[in-house]
Each structure stands twice: as C-alpha cells, then as structure tokens.
Length: 247
Image 1 (cartoon, one colour):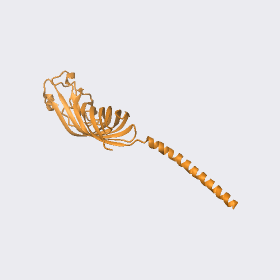
Image 2 (cartoon, helix red, strand yellow):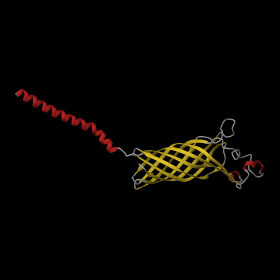
Image 3 (tube, one colour):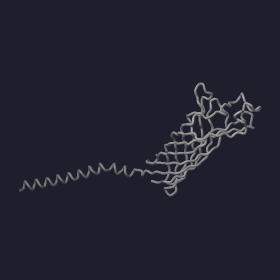
Image 4 (spheres, one colour):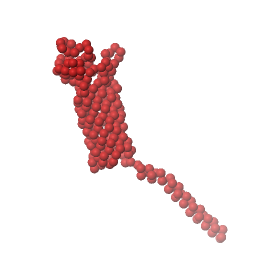
C-alpha cells in the first residue's frame, strides 16, 4: 500500500512537472507570433483618379532645337500597401508628350511648330512613403509602357513643303522631323517622382506629385541607314490625385 501511495504521489508530481513544461514551451513558441502580430500592418487597397499637366521634349540625335511643349495627363490609379512604408501603384493614363521647335534659337522666331503625341501610358511603380496618419511624403519609381493613340501637328507654316518657303531656316538646322511620320507606336521607359499626401478621415486622401519620365524607346527607326540615331520621349508631369480606401 505504501508502494502504491508512493507511486501515485510520484506520478502526480511528474504530471504536474510535464504540465508546467508544456505551458512554458507553449508560451515560448507563441511569443514571437504575438510580437509579430503586434507589428503586423493591416494591408489596404485604394482606387482613385489623377489629373495634371505635362512639360515635354524629345532627345534627338542629331540635335533638334526645342522648347518645352505643354500637355495634359489624366487617368485612374490603384494602390496596394502591405507594409508600413512600402506599396505598389498601378495606373492607366492618357498622357500628352511631344516637342515644340525653337525657331528663335535659329533666328526665325516667326515660325511655330508643335507636335503632340498622345499615349495610353501604364506605369507600375514602387511606392515608398513616410510620415503620420494625416500627412505623408512619398517616392515612386518603376517602369512604364505606352501606346500611341494620336499624333497631331500645330504649325503656322506649310511644314510638309518647308523647302519651298524662301525665308525658312535650312542647311544649318535639323528639319527632317517636321514631316516624318511616327514609325514606332510603342514606347517604354522609367518613371520616377516624389510628392506629398494629405489623408482625410483615414479613407480619403489627396496626393500632389511631380514625376519625370525618361523614355528608352525611339519614335523613329534608328538603324545605321536611318537619319535619327535617337528620338526618345522626356516628360515632366505635375499631377493631383484623389484616392479612396476600399479595403
């Protein structure tokens, strides 16, 4: 009977010890998960629209004397954030690019020529942001592809027959681009920008951004037999964006 009592007492002590070990192990295992849960950021998804202005030039080789051409940009945007400082932005925009000839540089300020290239542009941007729940700064960077949908010329002279104009500057300036058709409708490049965001009642926000597009594709053919070795889009965009959080 004493043996049974001793055995029963030892079993109770062993069981009590095992229960304590299991409790300690469970607490240790669950501790990192609890810490991570406290750090976990609730992801959100926002949609909205943007509108703004563009200032554009082309990078031509041989050089073409230009001044900034003004245009507009507008479209829709979506933003997904899953970390406290990191997210992704995708957009579909109608964007005007192109160039304006600087005839004053060539001593012929009476002539005006502007060529507007309208694209459907699709940037996919890394979105890095910082600040408070009401005011943030941000940096965006990523690739962009564009598809040309229209091409128009605004000129005060007959640019198709410029060689027949007596006082038109020739011989010392590049003129081949004036009547040259756009030979590549697909464009691609890198977009980067920075801005500020004002957050209203957590779900609504306004974003003001300055952005630069550096084109990597050429609008004209660029083989050794072609006149232009480079004809790339370059554009500055200043846009206001409204976003609403849907998740």
